[in-house]
Image 1: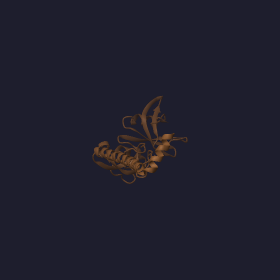
Image 2: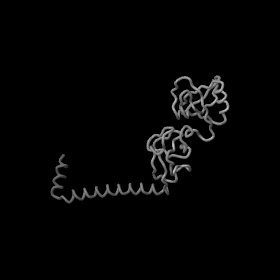
Image 3: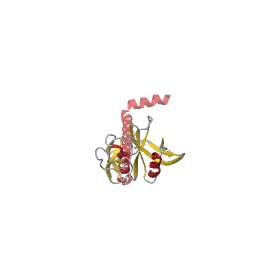
Image 4: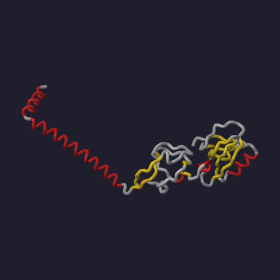
Length: 193
């Protein structure tokens, strides 16, 4: 403990030693911060050019308007998907779930409105008459079964109407689904995708 008392006495008699130590620490910290900032700038520059594209600011559900939950941000071209959206048509909706922070691409969006907005290219919409209350909602992922077999493992609920449900199915399974609907054997099951 005597050395602490001696050090305090030395610094009291010669304050320039104290201030030299303080200045040295401050210069060291300033140099470290400047180096870190320069490293960040160098990394940012190493990515090359950037472009302004739409990025989801919060999760976007199927059928929601894109412009409500997305904003344009600068993103390095090196990490951009080829179909990243640089502009969004007013009224465009999501055709699949989009996570917060995700770059929005062309297949995430439909420019149509109404039930057709959720119908992927190459799919067909089929109406199934329903006599009971259903717990389906527009945009739900589903599957269609009939006669104890899965006839459309990938389907999407386009609209829930009074007494009917409109579903979208891939074109290759649409005839089987239409036949099951016509025979009144089609059953819709919700799917977690």
